Image (cartoon, rainbow, N blue to C red):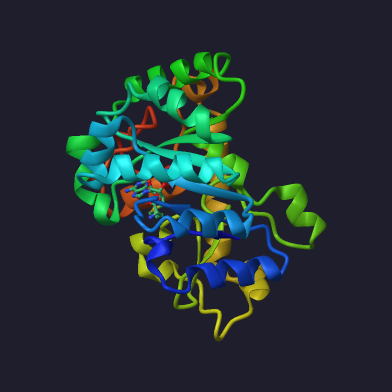
Length: 295
Ligand SMILES: C[S@@+](CC[C@H](N)C(=O)[O-])C[C@H]1O[C@@H](n2cnc3c(N)ncnc32)[C@H](O)[C@@H]1O
């Protein structure tokens, strides 16, 4: 069970909620910006003994602060070091934009000292990121160059797991064999890999589907049983099917097979279906209409 936000450490009861989730037997992890000044917070994280704490650091100081505001970098790095010294299992999340495509090596130098894992992924142009495409969008060729660089660097940094772009959603996906073992319908590697419950109890799948279209909220924990929604919700079923069709489409594309393309992503194509001006710079066909029109 992963807690994210918003920023969970802004809630007065964050520690109690995570502790309660652990007491129920869940494997618990969370995301934080690590911009906190109370030294007790790092100690509380260490006391919780979580599966993993993810700290967002979006490149070198200049690029991180372009995203997250002045003064945030030193505080986040200070808390990363502090939590590492206290034995917290850490991941660094690096949101890549066109400024930070060259930051892979410096991020690995930093993260490999303090974290067990680093994850590079790209900005989604929706919500508060809606206007960033023109200023922050990464061209496909730069994406591929960064991927190639990261693959090479993996050999130099054997003590840190390095995930980039699609790898993280594959790693954190609800795996098909695991799902079937528990009698659950399997999700596919994009679109239905995660199941979210908002602080008001609303269910949704994927990373941000309901913020693309409110209709993609899948019910509420106060009324509907989570198992029933996962198994029987018609909207979820359609998303799984569409997302599966996209995967098949990419797997049949020669550019993708040759590694000349990062592949499509269900939710990005959903955004593009509703807003045709948005491009998908991961995908060789990302300048054209949403692939959901083609599958
Ligand atoms: C929304 S944040 C919330 C947790 C925490 N406050 C933090 O800053 O990490 C969770 C993750 O989403 C990423 N994120 C934020 N805006 C994004 C966007 N427009 N596209 C893709 N990822 C984004 C962040 O970099 C972070 O790794």
